[in-house]
Figure (cartoon, rainbow, N blue to C red):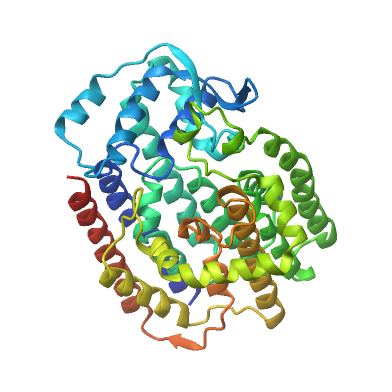
Length: 463
C-alpha cells in the first residue's frame, strides 16, 4: 500500500512538472515583453541588484531607483507605450527592433513601486544574471532568460511541495497549473518565488503535523531559511509561522525550542525590516512630478497616514474591507483563476467556470488512507489563513488606496495564491475517492484545457 501511494505521489509531481514546463514555455514565448504586471520594474530592479546594489537609493529625496543599463529602460519603455495604446498589437517589427538593441551606458532609472522590496524577492533571478554578467547579454536576452528562471523556480518549488505534502497533492498540482498562475510564473515577477516558498512551507508544516517524520539538521535549517525569506519578501505572509502551533509535541524533538526559534526569527525580521523598507517608500504626492506618473503609484496614497486612519477607525475599515470584497468577488476570483497580462485580460467565463468546478471537486474529495487534520489543527490553519487575508487587505489598502478611501482598491487575486489553499485544506473532506487514478487524469485534462484556452486568449489579444 505504501508503494502504491509513493508511486501515485511521484506520478502527480512529475505530471505537474511536465505540463507546467510545456505550457509555461509556450506562454513565456507568446506573452509580449512587459505585458505582465510590473514586469518592466521587476527587470529594472533585478538589473540593479545584479550589479551589486542590494537596495535602491533615493535621489534628491523625491525619487527612488538606481543606475542600470539605459537600453534596458529604452527597451521596456517602447513596449509599455504599446500596452497603454487603444489597440495593443505587437508586430514582427517590434521584436526585430528589440533583438537589435544592445547593452548601453548606465543611467539612473526610477524603480519606485518595487525599489523598497527586499533583494531576496529576486534571489533566483539575480544569482543567474550575476553569473552571466561577463556575457553582456542584450536587454532582449535578459528578459527571456529571467522569464525562464521565474518559470523554473515555480516548477521546482511546486514539484517539491507536491512530493512533501501529505494531503491534497492533486489540489496543489491543480492550483499550480491554473492559467493565471502559469501566466504569472512565465513572466518576470516579484511574487512567484515568494508564493512558491509559502506553499513549500505549508507542505513542510503539514508533514510535521500529520506524520511522524523526524526533522533532521538540514531540514531545520531549511525551515528557518524558508520562513525568514517568506517574511522579508512579503510581510503579509508572516502568519504562516503560526502553523508551528499545530505541530504535536511528540513530532518534534526539542519542540518548545524549535517553536520559539521560528517565532523569534519572524519577529526579529519584522522589527528590523519593516521600519527600514517603509522609510524608502515615497508616496505619489511627494514624488518628483516629472517621473511619478510612470511609476505605478496612486495619487493620495500615504501608507503611514493610512495606517493611522485604520488604527483610529478599525470598525469603519472592517466595513470597508468586507464591502470591497463583496463587490469584487467575481473580478478577484476571475483574477485568481484566469487572469493574464495587464489590464482586463481574462479567460472566457466558461473556462473559468470549468476550472472553478475542478477546484471544487478537488476540495470535496480525499484520497484513500490520506491523513486528516484534527479540529484544533483545522482551527489553527483557518486562523492563519484569515490573518494572512487581513494582512494582505491592510497592506493593499495602505499602498494603493487614498487615505480614508471607502473601498480597498487593487484586490488582485494573485496575492491570494498562498492563502486560498489554506482555506481549502482546513475544510473536512468526507467523500473518499475510490477512483483516484481516473479522477487525477481528469484533473490534469481540465488543467490542459484551461492552459490551451490561455494560449488561445493570448494570441487573440496581442497578435
